[in-house]
Length: 80
Image (spheres, rainbow, N blue to C red):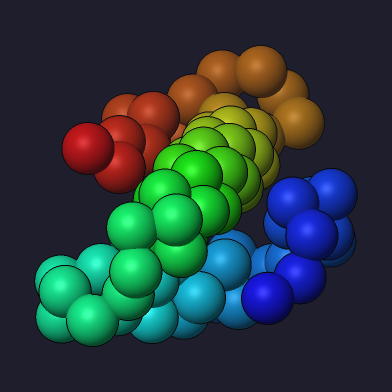
């Protein structure tokens, strides 16, 4: 498993795929306690990274929708 500092370099898709693997491993109950704690910590960091990437994408889409003139052409995008 890579170090947490490397999470920032992951794309949304890469982080999400790793997070899904971690969840599957934790749900299986096969990891020893110490490994489970480390996996949980990494999963929390990956979740945060994914949330940040989604927020950045939402803001980019909103800027596109608002356009250069500053007047919205349609409602701001919501990704809830």
